[in-house]
Length: 468
Image 1 (tube, rainbow, N blue to C red):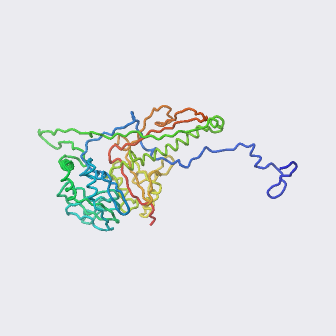
Image 2: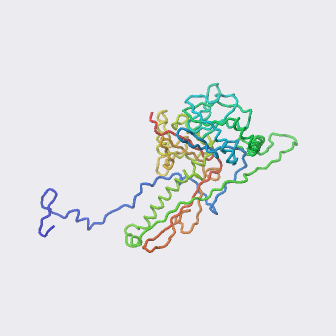
Image 3: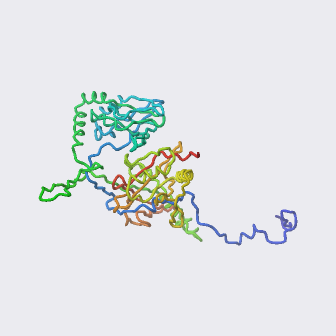
């Protein structure tokens, strides 16, 4: 603006006072701390009991168990053809811990693909078990007879499951239930005759099966653990049984995992731009928040120690109608004593609410730190956005019993690290490089351990997109 030029308002009138744009040059702006959308409630990190470990590892000692075959089977799909990965056959009871890749490959090649229509009966109660079925895709219901003679769904199987496995061990085995396809299914079938033909040409497989057939002679409890011999209700002077409690020879060890990053701050920024907020502190705060988000994600999804991948097969349930109804939640809770809390994706919690509304049920809520948390049977259902949602709009709901004293799920960490700012989380100064950039190494160590199998349960393949 030239000297003498008159300032006018937007309406074209002469300006009579100081404008806001010029006034702001003399004003102090009130500002917020840097905000971050990634920050979530992180209920799992809050509620998981943390145990300090030494030496970077935690060993879970358990009683010796004779139970075999408790995992999922993985398949490879090429077009419309499905094949089982040979090593995955080791999840079958007859092949557990068997490692001859050549023999497993021959068995995998003998698995025949079969497409099954919805409603088709795959096997009938009381008939001889001649084949083992590997479920590559779909849902299969185990149908039994209820207490009043009607049909009852005993269990629902989904992708990766198997049934009829007794055919490979016991030639006299019969079907103890009827298997019926609830949806269109793709299965791979391995017959006993094919299995025996391969065993005839393999001494190692014959010896392996012979050892397994001897296992049922071991006296075990319902969990597969060696039974403790006891005497009760006797009188007089009978011989008291002798016993001992055996342990697993190779217990599992959980090593602490790690999440790290190098935070870089230019020295000019750290020196000059620290009022009213310290730049280094804010950079570290946001970095630590991101590190904790990743930590919770790993606790849920990591293939080595994550909750979704460490749940035993017999603790994985399928919803009876796809959606997470009250009956499914009851079944999930009934699989363990003292369930401490449930974890579910927020969209899964909404789906639970819709199903309860359909039945005229109103879930109770509890106050946790000023948050109203829904419950089922008194067990809180915490939201966790780290639980994945598939493209088919299905997800999982996790149930946990926690704490060492309860033989539950625990978090693992190591306190007392150098330059520690929180337990098992440290920030180390790494020096200043030639470009005057300050480097800080931010590190978090963590893991999780499941002390006994029934401490952790998962309701899988929960539909969250059904609105009617």
